[in-house]
Length: 78
Length: 222
Image (cartoon, rainbow over all chains, first blue to last red; front, side, top):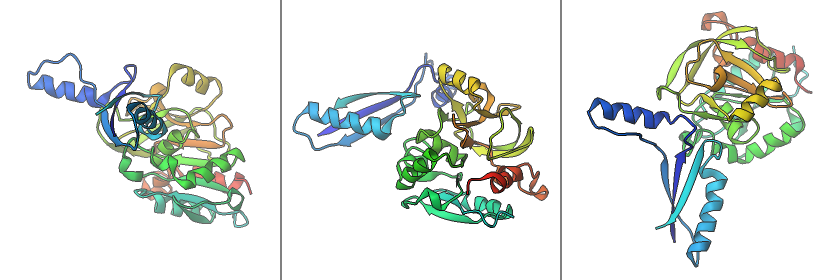
């Protein structure tokens, strides 16, 4: 079963990548309110149901995929 | 000079690239360097201190220092910390120490998003008992992810407990409170983004980095 994990910088942390994309877009007359850059990780786990898959993915994400000091995450079964 | 001291362990991961500079720096102050491979396990008692060098461990995948912080060698480094032994993390080594929880905070992409490679002036805010320096230091930085970040409560703790080690005179990367280096609460663990090992002799630009290692020879634990 596959779980997608979305990891995004916390709003209080300056997202320098997102800021750089915003600037580039504005130079090309592409209007945008904000760009937030993060990452999307797909985990293929052995699980009998969605609940178990999400539990496993949460454990893995908290172990290494995100840093709670500067990032937050969301998960979805895909 | 210091020949009776136990060796200094230098940690190496896949992608470490400042390891040989650290080796030379440790040798130049009369201490014996010894490699510690990322898969190694070691007895802290066999060493007098440890350096985690700079580079791009694991290609900076996930977050810089994140995967290295989970390597077997870090388990033993944490034991060394519990014994209060001196541990110095430079650049990627600093990032690894933060990711492993040995130091607070995180190192994020520079505010400019650019890799910055230049000489910087630093001010010593609080002295490290093991890695000494002048009050004003001129040594190089070379990093893309050196913006020190921590929450307000952690910053206050760092200030109140005299854990801010070094500050940039002219903040190059957007670090909170101009922080270039910090100490842990016990002051045995130190991390900084600039590279003292690249300023060991006058011909290298300055010799301001020499004292960081020389003091380890004088005051490192046996």
